Length: 224
Image (tube, rainbow, N blue to C red):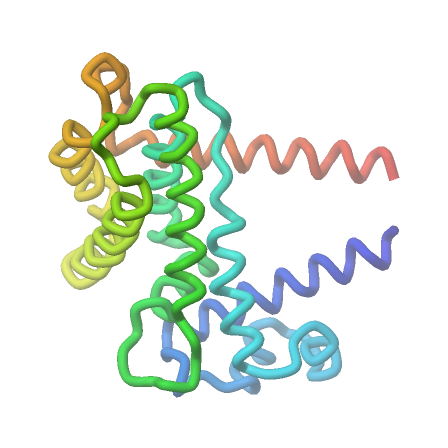
């Protein structure tokens, strides 16, 4: 079990180092040597987990969707809002999220298939919106798949604009404004009135999620 835990930690360390390199340099300019230097691991340790730079980049793109898991809410649309605000907050400093964001929207390189990242986010959002619609939270006229793709595409544009102006420091506020303008066309009025859209919610939720993860990790370590 201890060896397995070390392997998991090493993989995460490599992923975070790679994400930071991709964020700083982009995919084409990033090198395995730079990832090794930042991660502080041997070449053998890296290649045990990832066979190439492309595999590293694809793993970063996969991980950034898996990392966003918010607490269940009575209103499913609140989970949708919360997931967006947690992502917006983490894009300020989380290496996985920042590296994945650059990889997903970077122009120029044809050596990396970026479609999977957008598809994964669209599926994630579509799932939340479908559950919300099943609960009667979403207007009947809404086409869920088209709406999910609209939100994913719009978020990509919002984070690029925020990155250019403030290094994403104002992304949470920009997302709140976007929700305020678009959710009235998606949510039924009774649900819309109950949604918490404030831009500080991402930071609060992130702190709670990380505290819970630390507590769970401590419990797991004690049990082993």
